[in-house]
Every structure is written in structure tokens, then in C-alpha cells.
Image (tube, rainbow, N blue to C red; front, side, top):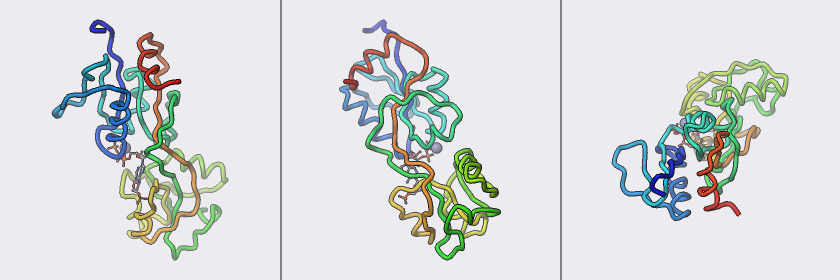
Length: 205
Ligand code: PRT
Ligand code: ZN
């Protein structure tokens, strides 16, 4: 096993998916010693290394084959143009991509978005939705704290991830429609490698 080339799996460095992703790997019997600040973590009992990345970069690493596998939200995969193969869906990271508007707003259904400003971190998914609905609206790209944009009159509506709904509530926003239901998934690179079979056999029936 010592001379076997290492497989690589891309995992979110910090944030919501880091802990459940590492728990999944540990549930397969893989062990990891404390890693300090390094962004590459060697598995102690299997030829595998974990790459700690921003979740947004994981689809690219896996599609290019730099990482053999990755754990990422379907929302992130759907927003990227690259699309590695999904081989497992997890029971964590559940959320929805929704459109929401201030409770007292006149925006109540899709047609009300015509001519309005919509802030989002998912411009491609939003643009696809607007096209499908034959609507024209200004997309305001924002990388985080999207819920604040209506309060500050930067946008009339938002397109963002919701889980409990508490952040929407705190900003007097109502969810109007769901664009995408999402959960964390395991993706595989298109590059064939004999070593992948051993890793996959740890959890595939
Ligand atoms: O640093 P990096 O780029 O890696 O992390 P990130 O900040 O982009 O992502 P992170 O850690 O917030 O989320 C990682 C993944 O978890 C997302 O891509 C989703 O697949 C999934 N996920 C599950 C969520 C949520 N639930 C979630 N609630 N991602 C984000 N949120 C945010 C949402 O954007 C909103 O601001 O939480 C807020 C709403 O939460 P509620 O519970 O108030 O509705
Ligand atoms: Zn991110």
C-alpha cells in the first residue's frame, strides 16, 4: 500500500460542510492526525490526502482531475459550468435556493420580478430562471450577507440560500419561490484511476 499513488479528496476548508465531510471520511475507518495549518491533510491509514478548499473551487478541482473526489453542495455545482459526476448524496447540507422579497413588498409571484433588482450570489442560476420565466430583471451580484440588500435599498428582492428561514425572518423577508433544492454530494472526477475502486468500495454497495 505504501507505494500506491495517493488519491485526493477536496473538502470545504471551513464552514458548514467541513465537519460533516470529515465525519463521513472518519466513518469509513479513515484516520487523521492533527494537521496544524496545512491545507493538505494526509490520511494515516489509507493512501488518501484531503485538500481543504473554498467550496466554490471544489467543482473545478474535481472536474480537472486534480482532486479525484470532492464533497460539495449541489447549489455550488449547479452554479458552476463544470459538472463532475455525483456518486453519492449525503444527509447533510440540506438547503434551498429561493427568491425572497420584503414582506411589505408588492413582489408576490414571478411576474412581479419584471424590471426589479435582485441581489444574489447565484447569478447564473438566477439568470437561467429569469430566462425560463421570460422575465427581465437586474441581477446584482453579491458574495455574502445578501439578506441585507433590500433593507439598504440595493435590491428589491433576493435570490439566496435558506435553511431554517431565521435570517430571512430577521430581515422581514418572505420566501416566494424555490429555484433549487440542495444537499451535500460526493462527486468524482472524470479521470480514470485504478486506485479509485478501493476507496469507492468502502461505502458503495
Ligand atoms: O468559505 P467558503 O466559500 O467555503 O464557504 P461559504 O461561506 O460559501 O459556504 P457555507 O459554509 O456558508 O455553506 C457551505 C454549503 O452549505 C452551501 O454551499 C450549501 O450547500 C450548504 N448550506 C446549508 C448553506 C446553508 N445551509 C445556509 N443556511 N449555505 C449557506 N447558508 C446561509 C445562507 O446563505 C444564508 O445567509 O445561511 C443563511 C441562511 O440560513 P438560515 O438558517 O437562517 O435560513
Ligand atoms: Zn463559498
